[in-house]
Image 1 (tube, helix red, strand yellow):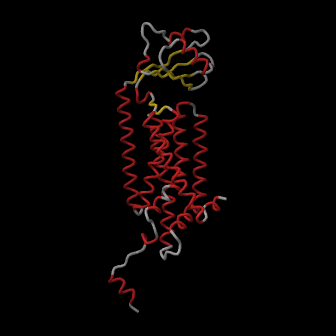
Image 2 (tube, one colour):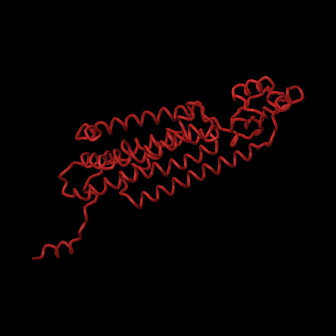
Image 3 (cartoon, helix red, strand yellow):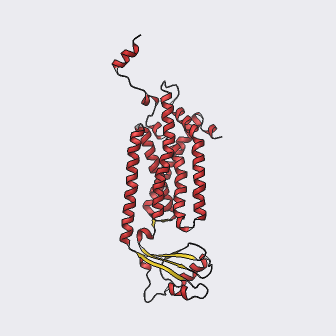
Length: 311
């Protein structure tokens, strides 16, 4: 079925349509990021983090409703288990003399009977440093990737892989901005993982394109046909690899709980768009830039040509 859609002009048309769709999604993501920004978590903004346990199993929504009655500021409550909870507060949500103390309320309530395990304050300066260091790590990874691609591929294939990589990161960030999902350190770590995964997909397709271009040095087949053949020959392996990875990430998303939910969402989205971009961008953009079998012809100097022509 997939091979049928990748045949001849139909496959080329689908690749270019996919590239156009990617460009539209990137523009929408950039617009969303500029308008709404990212919903930075406590790791970056700073605030109060309190962990506590209850004497018996309590529903998250029920406990959240009870705390809201005794808390004037904004907070985020996550369940670490049936009776283990974590509450995050913004710096402005600190309790004052005129505001009710939610900790006293949950510890003195006979039904909840909570016990505070730890309570800590994370300053905004620490969050700023973490964000700067995380962005620096991502920037360093991008530089290393560009150097690697420049050495490994002809420049057109290298440009296609870099653009596909940037495309994947922008779409993931755009999704987090659109849905206002909390952006914390685990999500930042997932972006670094997406860089590696997206690069792997692009290299697999790029390697196959390069091999077929070298074989077709006589220019019998057009570059579009060669790229379609390269995608068809790697598509099954790509889908199997992506499918098994997606199953693992989906398990983390559904079973690991709230602390790893953002990480799983980012990685799941990155794998999907990374597989898509390796076909519609990493393999298609070089064609627009003039990639052909001539780029891989072995150039022979005049002296060597003379020796080859000798009987």
